[in-house]
Image: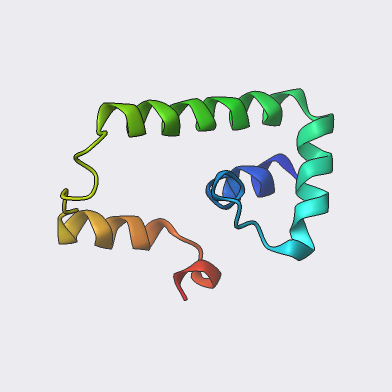
Length: 81
């Protein structure tokens, strides 16, 4: 697994949804790579800060359709489902 691979699976990792067949390689790489450990920690902190900032609002907030469309365009084909 490469650093690029790790960055592509950070959301799944933080959500506890990384595919089982990748979890071991992902974890080994993060443990061995200082840059990926820092990126993962920063990602986790960003999510925690966002949750705290929008506490109580997230359930009622709607994402505009154009934002959803732009986000979907950035996903690799395999993740679009």
